[in-house]
Length: 237
Image 1 (cartoon, rainbow, N blue to C red):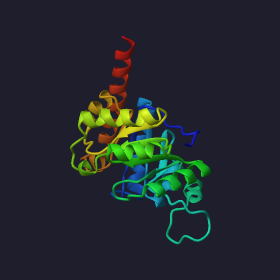
Image 2: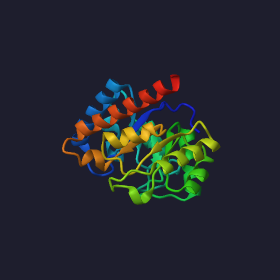
Image 3: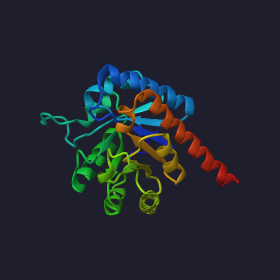
């Protein structure tokens, strides 16, 4: 596990995938960066590789992660995503094993080790409880608990899934942060999942397909803050 990871709970992740890029993405991430500072919430944004430097050179509170990385060393590797290159471009971490870019467990392990070596944090997606257990044993910094069948549906995970996935990961390594993904469409979804016990959540299409992506992103980030603060107040009572 990369020990200098700067992300702390609660946090939020925005994955633009290939929906938006370039100047339009920069404008949205600028708004997200301001919301992150306003609500004191760490935010991960994982853009296309071509946009890493564009965003990393402008943000203050947002942390830029790559959408994918290969475990190759410098040298041969036409078309691959080199760890050293994304770090030099300004990324501080990398997302791995998304449902649209699945890896074998062996590939995940090798890529986490290369990220550790280069100095990049890792956030790894997992679908089933069995996959979460296997990935947790590899020591990533964060795990995305995300049922594949719910991605892009607007239907969040059940609270049973949320609670079980957190328990499964923490039983293996309590230092791994657990993000609940899939189907997060608005601030209410965000609030509910954080109140249920999640340390983080995130969204892709829920933000980019909203009438105002900037307003929706702020709504979601504000919901993280509100739900987390309410949990903390209950714990003190």
